[in-house]
Image 1 (cartoon, rainbow, N blue to C red):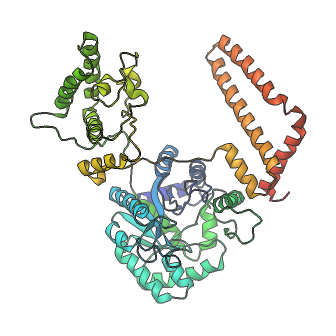
Image 2 (image 1 turned 135 degrees about the horizontal axis):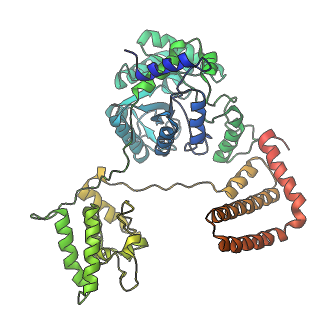
Image 3 (image 1 turned 90 degrees about the vertical axis):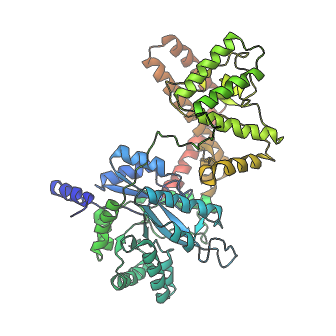
Length: 543
């Protein structure tokens, strides 16, 4: 029986002969930092325009973008395929010797199901924790251990099989291919054939086709996409220069050959890989095998063990009623009423265990003499937090609202910000890991983004534009962004008919605008020329 996607595609082809469907399985988004230039929304929109029923995300060594990608695909009606292009250590992930372990092979892994997603997440975690050496690296040991639920593609020119072919080690290429086939299974390992106009790829494709027939490993057509449209190649080149600290006129720098690393249509893919027709239809077959969905809105908290004879709710309540006496003497009717209200809300929302977990590791820290901060943020508005010594600020004394912290009408996890002495906070983390298990504890990640002004300065440096000119352009961009935000606000005020506020804000905006432009009025012509220079450099690559 034909797969669901293939059946759906055949029906679409009956209705329209304009574009034949294809699925891109090798794509780098902007989450491949300063390497991929594809915005997630733009990439998905383009795939939909090209009648492509599914799309994969395979960023370099990270999975930062998968949730945003998944949600955007679902919203657009495109099937999301979660994946990653992992780095494979040439020896083991623990080997980190200069000259021997500097370069890692590339391997694309695609998620088939929930087990596959868990395994891919585990592989990437181990790659960063154990194998990081310039890049996060996996090795054969953990690939064998966490291969279930994954489809493996042999990768680009940097793939292990491809590299062995380029080194004329055909026996080594065969051995590597057999290892991957045996590890992932005959139905879950494919040779990637690519053609970006490089003669090395023609040579690799030739040998992959021979190995495919010899070993029974199917071919799949991919394009190593780093941007959405062909004209975006220049932007991606600039990003690479920013990443490496190079300038565009540096002839020795690493750069992509040609401008073919964009999201192509079926016809374009057929034109460059038409000698391997089954590789095109195999993209649909793989897409049909990948059926993983995230589940949002569920909380999965560790279990707090309560004393015998108690439930989470009853122990939490008993603890609060006992500890409140250490904060208030006497416990007034006002205190009791506030405590009762908060207890009811917390138990109703199912967060008794959450408070007990936080109370427990703060208790541990205090008993060990580790300095603990008084608490920050909206948690200070909770008398329960105060009673349990999670915070040290009396919410009644300062008239702080509990509803800012936890509100039944706005269901969200509580957020308690706690500061520990930086020299000993590791002891608190170790305590939590020991109590709840290493697989139940993780630390959050933060993302650094490139602000507009910083991005302009980086681009100016890469393009060798004089710093004075770049500064003028950066200042002009900030001013335009401020005015855009101001007048967007004004528009909303007008729609809400707040005429008095509108008049006041308009006057303020005009005054601010005049203040911003007064000093620069004489330099207006210079600034216009600066913007033109940036535009010329970005689009034409010349002064």
